[in-house]
Amino acid sequence: FAKSCPDPEGIYNLCTVGGSSGFGVGKDEPRAQDTTHQATIFAQLADIVLAVDVAVGGEGYQASWWQDVVMSYSWGAVVLPVVLGAGAAHLEAQGLPRPPCVPEDAWAVLSSPTAEHAARAEAAAVAAQSLYAARQASIAE
Image (cartoon, rainbow, N blue to C red):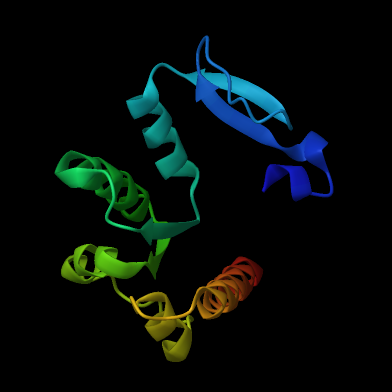
């Protein structure tokens, strides 16, 4: 992703003190004391979280992963679910609300465990554009 950005000088990679992002693009910013602190910082910075749930890694992974999503949501980020296969049950159980500016059809595709990958990508783009437009409108007010 970062390698495809037109201005790699504007990319900053949050990493732990003494650590490295390993991305090879942009500037590493070693600001977090550990990975928990790093997750907290990300949660505070996030406007939109693409929550891709593939139900991998077992119970502990799911709990940790979901805590990061909830933390971002509690700081005001909009969570867009991208449900893949068995992960649907986890996101559906959480009852994520559809942001009013996100079209219902895009939300339905993002929340569907059977949607095609191309359709999911298009729905995520539509949702993100809608969120961006709504954010710009609120800034202008």
